[in-house]
Length: 288
Image 1 (tube, one colour):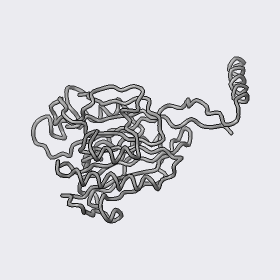
Image 2: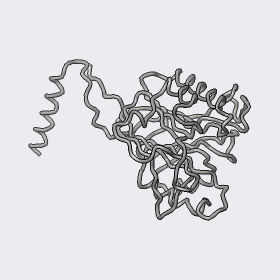
Image 3: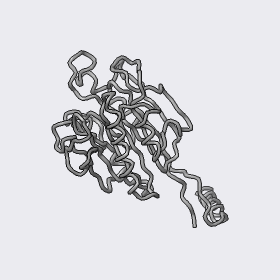
Image 4: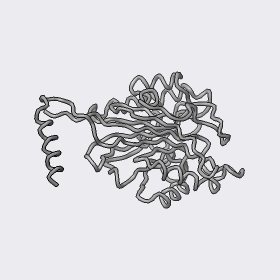
């Protein structure tokens, strides 16, 4: 007990000796954030069917245990299964038509780590506050599900925005419009609260969509101190990825680690996309 007291006292003396405004090293655990296109359950071929791969997905998520993960192509059936098999996780988000019967950009979070301060949705259209709205020539509604989270351990807050952009090659101009709308929304957020954007962007780094996003955000993979796993993410259930469609973008975070998770629990690929995951560190606190 005495040695513990001496150690605490020494740390207190060190802290008192620091000059005003000194940035203290961040000792809290990093925030683990994942983006995961879960592939909507329309496939009938063995190995691609939801019933064939749902347990592999649960296994991967339990192993990684992200504090929060943004999904794409999620439907209610999948969300219900994941929540039932991932104790402590909750999720939110309307579907892309403003209800619950279509695909969601559902956001899941560990309720033991995070609290939702506020959350909502907006649509990538000329009328973003109109649920299900479609403009710009999109074939179907495209949207963002977002939240302001607070970490329970230390009270730190961050915004997460999760999206899925249109997929056709000719949709690049529409993807750029979506990126610019998201950037416009980001510009209205408090600058002192970090931001993370997750998604299947259906475009690769170097594209005009990527350029529109990275004018306001950093690519977590490029910023990471440590990078693991393949660069490419979409593999169409072959295990041989061909394009890098899934990104994590940040503002105000340091990136300790970035992973493309090519796990196949039990020999089963959980989806046709590999999930990507970043370990993010909040800016160091400043003593004044």
